[in-house]
Each structure stands twice: as structure tokens, then as C-alpha cells.
Amino acid sequence: MNIPNIRLLNQQLVAPQFSEVHDMVSWMGMLQAQEYRMMRWAVGTRLKRPSMKAVEAAYNTGKIIRTHLFRCTWQLVAAEDLRWMLQLCADKNRSTINGYAAYYGRTISEKEYDHANNLIHQVLTGHTSMTKKELLSHLAEYGFAEDTRLISIYLRRAEADGVICSGKLDRRENTYALVDERVPGSSDLTREEAVVRLAQKYFRSHSPATLEDFVWWSNLNIGECRIAMNTIRGELLEERYEGSTYYIHQDCRIRGGCPRTILLPSYDEYLIGYKSRQHVIEEEYRDKAYSRNGIFYPVIVHDGKIIGNWHPSKEATFFNEEYKVDIGDAIAKHRAFLSESSRRNSL
Image 1 (spheres, rainbow, N blue to C red):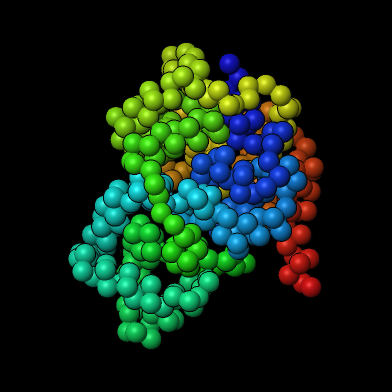
Image 2 (image 1 turned 60 degrees about the vertical axis):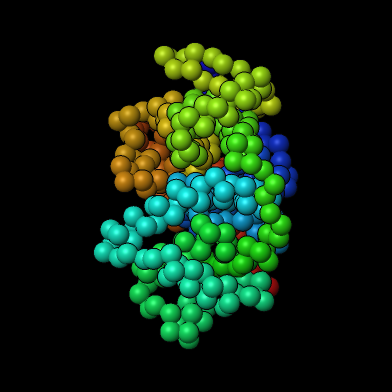
């Protein structure tokens, strides 16, 4: 079983199947979106035709949403998935946020969180989008906390509570909008149904993957992850490989397309979407792709293997001389993607 090549196919990194941004993001379940600028390339490189214009349009119209979800980190999701995903991760995120506050010597009551949520809601009501700077300026007028760390805690809690999410795409900074205005409606799924849907999305887009991979990605309890996988057992092909059990969803491709040289953004799903990463990077080079404290770097992938690092404005580096390949076409593809935005912004 060629795990890297099958993952490339199902993550839409080789022979992508989608032209529409929303459809691709929905297929992936969620795309890690820590780095505000690089997240656009995480989407673009998975489209039949990488298009910054298409990414911006989907973001600006609210077809895709960026907010803190699973593992209390930034992700991009299809708008219709936001509410049922929030119900799965909100409690753990609230606990994580409280832990973060405690680490900095703060104890915040539910009454204080409610007050902050109400104030944020009041400021954003009627606004389709505000940059973070604009939002903080308005909050300051109400005498709201000037401590940037405390503000960050309140904003993240407002996301966990389903009050705010991303607004329109700004070239440089985060934006916010009200969930009720951006994503009207509610989730009609029970928690059990939601976990099953999450499992379907994960395994169709990330196969081959293990139970442990799914637990890592979702940050859900192993028990409910196992139950969800048992529920969709008929959709999963089970295969033993190197001592572990891998699952491949029936909707996945297992052959087709040609592995190629790919420039992946920081925090890309090809790495961060799995606990088992040994198939795509050798252990001796692991710290060049991601650090022990959770920082993931932009990487070069060739024939499914991570072989080096790249940067939009710096020379690429390879892990060793044997790994050196020509990345000229991949660089040109990325520059064309960026230049589309530059041309439009200069008009």
C-alpha cells in the first residue's frame, strides 16, 4: 500500500477533482488555517485551477468560514458545517481557553464571558465584517479591556460560543463577523450523528488513516471516535500495514494521477492531519518540517515524500543533496496564484 500517493489523491493535491472552493473545503471536512496568508494557498493548490480570486470570493461571501474549531486552532470549513462542528468541540475549547487564561494568572467567570460576548455582539451587529483592529477600537470605546492577551481570550471564547467567526478577507489581518449574520440557521444533528458525519468527511479526504489519526485530528474522545467508525464500518476498507490498521473510505481514489513536486503551506493537512507522519517524512528530518511545540513549516513534497523547505521570497532548502529536485514549475504556479491578487488590488 502506497500511503503517501493515496493521501495525495484524496487530499486533492494530485489530480484535484474540484473547481469550486466551497466544494473542495466541504470534501476536506476542515483545512488547518493557522497562518492567515498561507491558508489561501492551502485552498488554491487543491483546486483544478488555483485561483486567488475564487478563494477570496468564497471567503467574502461566507461560503467558507475561518474560526477556532478542533484542537482550539484555526480552521477553514464550509459554512453549513460550522454549527454542528462547533457543538462537537466547543466544550473542550472552553476548557482550553480557561487553561490558557490560568497560565497567565487570570480567572475569568462565566458572567465576565457573557458580558464580553454581549458587548462583541453589540459592536458587530449590522456590520458584515470588521478587521480585528476596528473591532478592538470599538470595544475600547466601551471601556473594554486594553490588555491584548485578555482580548484574545475573550475573542476565542466568543468563537467557541458561536458568537463570532471570520468576516471578509483582508489582505493582512483577521476579520470578524457575527455567526448569526454570516451563517444563519442551526444544526439539526445530534452529537452522535455529528461525530459520524465528521468521521465520513475525515476518512474520505484523509485515507489511508488510522483510528489514532482520526482521534488526533478531531481531538474527540477515542470512545466516540471508535463508535462513529463502527457506524460507518460498511464504508471503510480495512488494511493492515506495518503493524497498524489503516482505513480507506469507499469514496476514495486509490490510483490515478502522477505524484509531482508540490509546495505545501505551513500547517498543511498533509502533515498536520495525521498522528502517523512517518510515511511522508524521515524521522531524522522531522524537526525541519514541524517543531515539538507545534509549529509547522512550509515544505516541499516530491513523489509523496517531504524533502525540503521553501519560502515565497527566499531560496528553497533541501534536507540533503540527494533530495534536490527542480521546483521551478511549482514556484511559478505559486507566484501565478499570488500575482492574480496583486493585479486585482492594483486596479
